[in-house]
Length: 176
Ligand code: NI
Image 1 (cartoon, protein in one colour):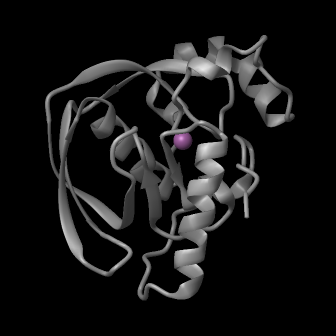
Image 2: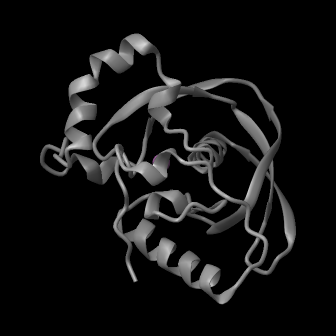
């Protein structure tokens, strides 16, 4: 079942999500549905709060290896990198965001095994972006106040459910 992806302005995106204590059939079904939703939206990452479920779960697939991150946490981060970033919950908007260049992340997979993930580049960015979602943080919280004021109109449009897309430009993006 494909979910509707919540957009900026909807409350669950701003909530702090709860840890997962047991991997149930409901969780497994949710993960399958999240992959369907993300692939349909041509995203490379999706966090459970984006489909209205406030639990600490995210999925990432930058093209080679689909990852399930249950109760993820960042153990180590290093370097800095500024890149254009988008989000399925802010359709049509991209902004330059500074993040750590490399991260080491610990998470549990669907089988309940704890694993460590060393990530850099797009994968490191996706991990940091999705973990932010679990804390109610959006990438627009990581841009300057001045820039946020400049895009006030676009943010209002997204809040009102209006599209920022022109033609098919979204096809080129890989939002999280
Ligand atoms: Ni996002």
